[in-house]
Image (cartoon, rainbow, N blue to C red; front, side, top):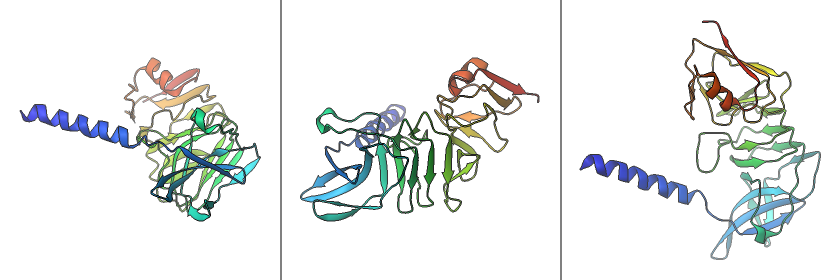
Length: 241
């Protein structure tokens, strides 16, 4: 009986979590060229987050406060999807450089097709999708560099690549990072899902003697699966043991 109950409980928890992380935010306002989304509970404005940009700009430093319905509200989250509900009727664009300043806590989705460089401040504690911690929610096809404040306690960047602070997990390799060749560092133990998605890499050097963990469980010995995992890389070269 216990064997039956345990899976059912786990399934219920999974479904509940999946439902809770997809809450709808039907209210939207544009202030100084930045779209914000929010909820209204009773008569109070709450859960305000950056939702997109009205016009293209070279660089944007996100505000940490915005006035909505006559009241000032702190902004601590970024959620910019690849598309918006049709009823909102808003247009969106993309800066080339985005600065997420101190005061922001999470980047739960960031889809900006023209973004080339992003700066993540020391206060950011999450760069994951709102429903999972299995991958960094940064989807920017022209991204060249990710910069993290050295004082950030959860993340760091090395050569423009995003890692966890302990450097054991590779979270995001900028798709348009220069070089075309990359060697998996010896300190990396885990590669998160989509870490190499759409990268312009031609070769990835991978130590054959190491067993690298990945959330999508690709077999490090299987070249085909590894190539699928890294996207468009032309060749995976296993280093000698």
